[in-house]
Length: 93
Image 1: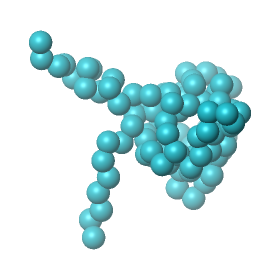
Image 2: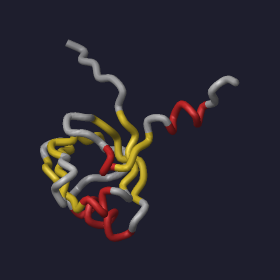
Image 3: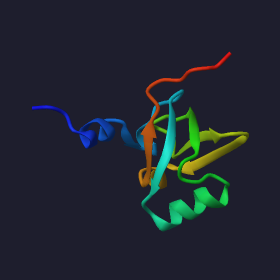
């Protein structure tokens, strides 16, 4: 059986809470109104690239950056923020 487009794309879709420290991703969807409002009010929108600064399972919050902004969000709310993991990065230097 060949893999379809969605099989390939969904492999890289994860809730924000499942990303590991040091991973890059794009915010794709804000499934919960209050979590979405909190993220948008902090200046981060769907389509923005993020970098996970700190995600420790024993902590109640996880922290990520987007551009020059550092954002910390409650772990329960982070479960409703869907991301697309970046599988590679490159520089044009």
